[in-house]
Amino acid sequence: MPERDLPTYRRIADDLRTLILSGELVPGEKLRSENELKDQYGTTRVTVRKALALLKADGLLISEQGRGVFVRPRPNVQMLTTGANFRKRRETGVSNFNAEAAAQGLRPEQRILGVERLPAPAEVASLLGVDDGTTVIVRRRAYFVNDDPMQLVDGYYPAELFGGTEVEEPRRIRGGVSRLIEDPEGPVGQRITQFVEDLEIRMPSPNEIKALNIPPGVPLARVFRTAHTAAGQTVEVLDSRIPCDRHAFRYVIDVP
Image (cartoon, rainbow, N blue to C red):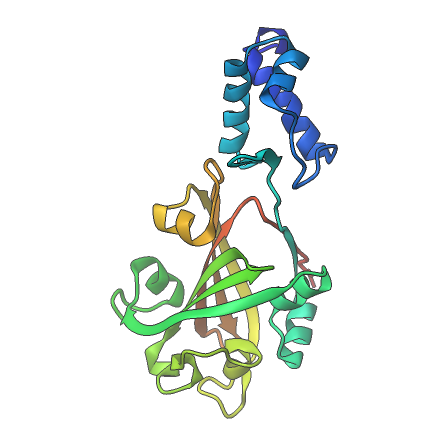
């Protein structure tokens, strides 16, 4: 539809969206009042409110009672994934998420939400290469940056391999589960040689909206990352739910 044929509220929303995405309106900046925007665009406050509601639904604006409308702050984390930095971070005992966030001047935190045994969900069983209902251990975690929730991550592990190990303890594991997998004295004792990631984009569930503080209209990225060892054994499936408004990912794939 040509711009001249767009409803006025859409044109206002498009103008403000352009200013936000270009950085002319910065995160945390207060917008002009409804009366000022009404006069600027030669329209009514009702029309301005429709435009602002559209941008709130897109996750670009927030309202604060008694203060006004602001550009929504977004604590973005840029994640770089390579085989080299996986090795480097595993040796230091610092997770890739924590290392990348800290390098960007942010304050990362991981919280263990719970550890339990349960029958493997069908999609997890398929990725692990086990029968539906096979007992797995799941470690549920939440990732934060500057106290803002960033990811929900559930790690699934075959109970026959990891039962009775640190994986079943509700505490962080130095170097992560990958360190335990590659430990020659550990339950697997094999080197991880491949990660496979399956990505889907969908709208979040009510529980995900609450846990991750997701604004209306913001979709969720769900990433299944499966770890394979040198012997071809599948030892881990990570199910990550990530709001699409606060992450940027870069994958470097070395092709021999």
